[in-house]
Image (cartoon, rainbow, N blue to C red; front, side, top):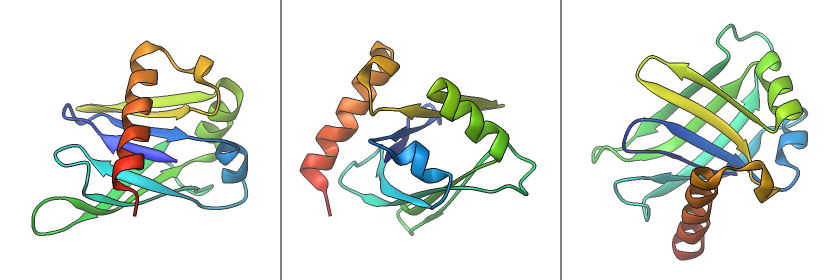
Length: 129
């Protein structure tokens, strides 16, 4: 799983391989890239929260320089079921969008999302921990 918050504040999370299916039973770990400096990566985790009223909720911890040191995403069960069925799910939160995308099959991604995912894969190859 790879993720980032883009300059316009939109959050993109790309699930790879069988991570969407595994998410039903376990927390998924991945890498989050800070858009101001992609070499400043941090851990990214995603989980389902059956009790959560919000459809998707993000939280994180930042260091004194303003870079995320940890990024969390929680998904309620209803939104998760949409992700399983459509291989994509998203919400609009006033000032930003949160997009969950299945990158295990590139046909699931439109041109812009495919470009964004490939950029994150490039960062991963350059800055993997």
